[in-house]
Image (tube, rainbow, N blue to C red):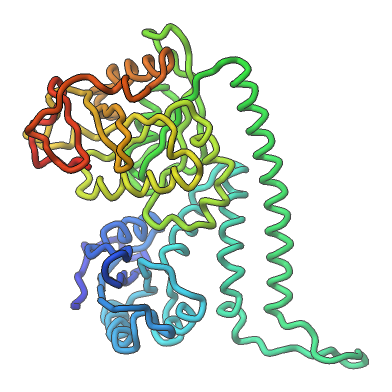
Length: 414
């Protein structure tokens, strides 16, 4: 497939070629590579070309096969690219072989996300978590880093056979560093547990914002709490969990609201494990506010991915409120009639859905109302049973109740 050029960026930004491979049904493949381009941009790179391929299985040596590797090499030369980024995970051997063949740096999706996380972590805890994930990723790729070093023997006057290789020394150093980081993160987790127990004793109701990256969680968090948390139109703008008190006038009580790290498709397992302490805020919340970019053309896939990660951290069964954000960016015919309706998750569970714009404040009063209900009475299935199903929205897995449905039946619902 011929490469698709991108818009011009500043000349100083490193130029990269993006590559995605379709392995058929069940594989994780984005034919547009738009999300990978956003990730590359978040890392400070400029995507100059996109290349896609179709295979039955990954090539053991080059992932894409030697013929496609040659094609990528010519595209790298054409655009004078500084690197190539793959949308899927590469094995250490594949990454090493591709770098030798292409003559430029090669990154896979995991490595790219780790780079972004490394640049965005601000808190002590966040930096520890990212460093742990980075070292665990690097430990499998030492052969690439040290392939130029030969096995070293003992020096003059020293007995014994061959000495340790540099790779063995570095692996040992990394293992020691990983052990130290895990111990330090265990202390952080203990501190968080102490804080949570304190909130539980005080009877504090806890709500956590979760969602796909760039869905507008931090903007919503700021709009509701006036916290001033950093928010930007980019992937993984914030990594560190922030918790603030939120007073709900209708409930006549305060609750805590936490803004957590965003999720993304194929989020590296090492990052999920490293951020266990942070994600525990979501896993132990009383209600999850699942923020969705209402204008995203792939919002269904993004909802599915967030639900998958929530299941993996033990938060899949927690009460949820789906918050469809960025409604101010929708076309006029897509605007909701009302700001509240009912949504059925793939598991069959129902949850309340609220339409808001964190930027303009539209619908935030309805969201506070729903939070007040949750804090006072909880959100069981009966809490979302508000009326008869609107027959205009007979879409698979969608329930839109009569008093609050969307104006356009083509609007994406699960």
